[in-house]
Image 1 (cartoon, rainbow, N blue to C red):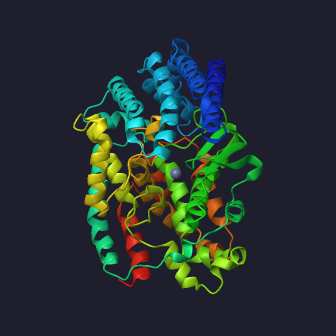
Image 2 (cartoon, rainbow, N blue to C red):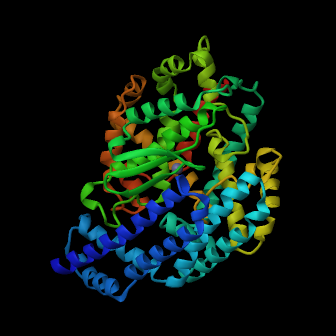
Image 3 (cartoon, rainbow, N blue to C red):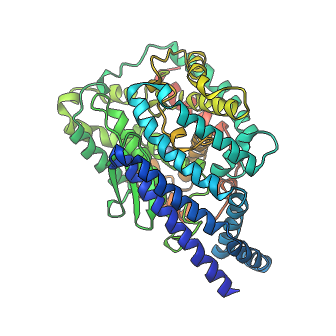
Length: 500
Ligand code: ZN
């Protein structure tokens, strides 16, 4: 059986390599590739996706997995090899259902849709994106039919990002959040509006870039095994052991855009950099789910990066980098500004309190399209109506509306709800870290992040995808995912900031 296992691992390593090659090319498409390369790139990505899919779903892989599964009963259930076989078997089960031509067509459509989206967004022209977006939703729906589902096609797609999660769970969580958040948003709206003009001055791009780089380096993101480049949409991409990259976007007229998203993406990057090296080139060299991945990025961005303790350390440093903007500006004014709660149009710039409402809107639209209640061409209308309804805002054009996010253009339908799941998990995890390591808050105030990162490495990062998402959260925090700690955290923090 040792030989079979070695054979399986060798196959899985080659499949990992093919996918990593796709990741490099996709990263390049979003950073440096000239627009003229889109057609050729779409073909390359389609070929690589098809090859990886064919190799993974081949009868040879299936036979190896079947033989190896018979050895599982007698082995240590938490051993890396057992977990590897189980994870690969689950992936096989899922991917095997998709025909290779659909996989290739999806990769090609996504690469072309991405180019169409970049252009449509800059021209504020939804019609220019519509054919590509219709294709993405049609292919997503076809994939859901191949995967199979009991209740909603959304279940089938969500399972690819958040194994084990159900549309009904997401609905329940959103209902709980709505009940908790709406009164909080109202109470805050009744208080005087925070003046955040201090953040809306001109902050030179080069200095912003340097400051954010210093911050994420100190948090623990390792530039010897990573780098940061510009892209229209911030993301984190891993090409394998020792190469975990971040992208960023700078707004010279709003300080938090770059800094907070750099911290966010570094949170993803530190997770990937903390994976156990022996898991490299295997299906375990990843996080168990997007929700857990997001729990790490949001933990660093919000629970650390928007905390009083963090700014006690960093505000004087920020003042020294931008004296022309911040000399004489009180700490309290800055801290309130960086935590300003106000309904806004752009998800990635949303405050912690209203953020989930942005996700709810996307979730509802995706479910409606997939279940046939909403036509893709009617998305802008539905989007704008929901922004009016949930956030009280008029959407002036689609670049500030349904064209703002990269996800659909990359074929990621069923993805958005994992952001909210990640937010909930971030608070549960952070509270457990502080219970285990009471020095963490004081360390953060001194600009020391090793105790927190060390705890996260030990309890979460190193395991990669060894555990299922629900299983890992239970092991780490002793509880399943729960909206109560998240709501209590928001209540506590913003009652203090807004004097509720
Ligand atoms: Zn993220």
